[in-house]
Image 1 (cartoon, helix red, strand yellow):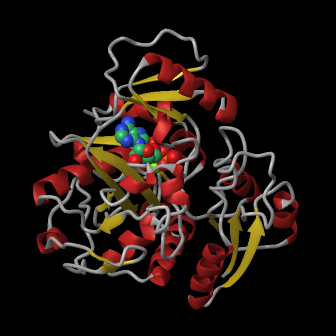
Image 2 (cartoon, protein in one colour; image 1 turned 90 degrees about the vertical axis):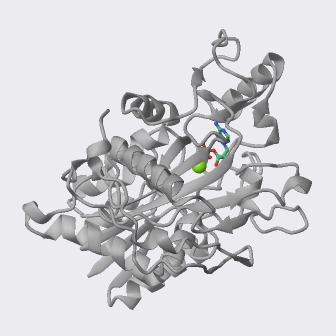
Amino acid sequence: MKIALICNMKPPTKDAARPADYYSECDSQKTVNAIAEAIRSAGHTVFPVEADRNLAVWLAQTPVDLAFNIAEGFEGDAREARVPALLELMGVPYTGSGVLALALSLDKAKSKQIFRFHGIPTPNFQLFRHADEPLDSRLKIPLIVKPNTEGSGKGINASSVVADEPALRAQVRHVLETYGPEALVEEYIEGTELTVGILGADHILPVLEVDFSECKGSGEFFYSWRMKEYQGDKQQKLTPRFWCPARLDPAVTQAVQSVAWKAACALGVRDVARVDIRLSPDGIPYVLEVNPLPGMDPEESNLPIMARAAGMSYEAFIHRLIDLAVERAFQRPAKRQAALSSIPSSHPIVPNPSVPPSGALPGSGEQGKGHPALARKKVPKEENLGR
Ligand SMILES: Nc1ncnc2c1ncn2[C@@H]1O[C@H](COP(=O)(O)OP(=O)(O)O)[C@@H](O)[C@H]1O
Ligand SMILES: [Mg+2]
């Protein structure tokens, strides 16, 4: 096949007038090269192409069979949904989620309203459009202030966690001025940082735990922008340790996977997603957000780490994404892979049985502690949805 690899590359020089994190969601040359190489290794021809205003003309002039979409776009709450919308207009099948799921999942507050509707735990929250709106007195401090429609930890740092109202208002004002138009204020959940990868309608990856206990010297204590941007920087002490599978009891792992699966279904994502969760000390897996365009750096991004822990090479992981899109686009309608939410309730979600009991993980030099039982454990069914 001829496959367009649609991305937003990091520019060679950064605009100094922009915030330092402005380009954080752009794709590195390394990631684009790795995906392109994996696509070629399956025998396809690949055309990396920038998702900018010229894309429509490029698509009209360059017949391709499929688009591999990793473009997260710039500016505005539709930025992740633009490429899929254009591809649908041009009749080009593509990998991953569709327009609605991409737009919804970018909006953290809207996602949380949907989680609530489905009984999915998510931190209590309030959305601010002005810094002086009355604070909902039911919210328990500490609180965390985040841009409502950003990713990659943008706008999230140690001063995002606030313990009194003056600090809250100052942080809300900063977020509105820098990332506007909405600031999301959430109860801060102490506990364990987890993320769950979903691949296709029948494959949930081992849970990844991100451990910040060795990062105290950095001044950051959770997955902030600096932690993500400079991950592994020993001088700055931004050295999270990764545990995949996470160090959880099997029953807790199952509960975490179940909640992640429900969250992905609730937003109607397709093919691939990473669901971010904070597990509270009393065992509640609070869903923070669903990422349908997760980072794809072959060594550093969370999802490829999880795929590797499940025994999948990076190439196999990319080939699987292509296969899922091909099945949807070219197979008989009855066999097509639809959004996760339309899986029959009897459909089992089976983790890859080849999950190794332990594995060296990139970036940390760490050995993941394994739960061999996880490999063949039954995991959630969609019948749990819609409570
Ligand atoms: N309510 C919260 N409680 C505890 N930590 C949080 C909370 N919200 C965000 N965080 C921390 O900030 C990180 C980034 O937040 P997230 O909502 O996932 O935004 P992003 O889209 O930038 O990844 C999380 O992975 C977590 O470490
Ligand atoms: Mg996140």
